[in-house]
Length: 255
Image (cartoon, rainbow, N blue to C red):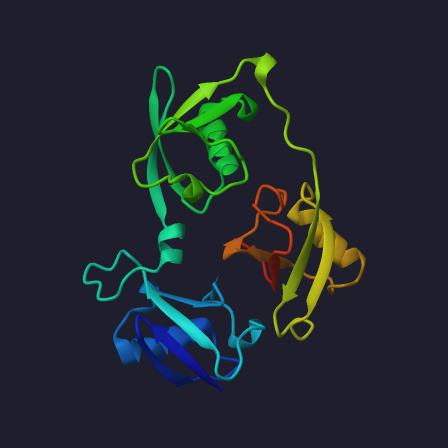
């Protein structure tokens, strides 16, 4: 089948086989553009293609599919602009300031406020429920919004205030989510499985539901939401899953 490789304002077609891996596709691109595979990011419909998977593992890839190529920002002789998606996902360093001390933390702007609080808790031991994070005089009020939505950027200074026990606000109540689990083409021929879940359900609970209902054959699986591998013990709310979102499932494990 032929794929359309799109980079900047250029595009060209490339012949690939369904069994070819993403890495092999990157190697073909290297022969044409002289861009090392380690500096390439290939995406289809906003989903980054993973080196270890084959073309047929992606249900959205077929004859004529557009594959967007962007270049990692670490390339010193960069000839192409960094995509907005890549800027959103790259790691940045921020300054976290307490009343009497500071510390630096590395995060991605695509992380949520809650995940930043968890990192602070792991490093410093401060209880998450007592934290109030403030950037430029504005409180980061909603735990499940992305840091990028609050304008967090490289070297932003976030101040941590501690709430009084009497002023602590309970977590918002759980809510129902309607999501779609999308399998790869090699797994159930790329099925789309609508599910109703509680946003406090963990990824492990999602997996167990699919296995117990025999929707998926018994095996190890990776779940992906918005180009990020989901953590088994974290809830859908923690991952920022919203109503109507797609969750992609592939066979495999994370080492």
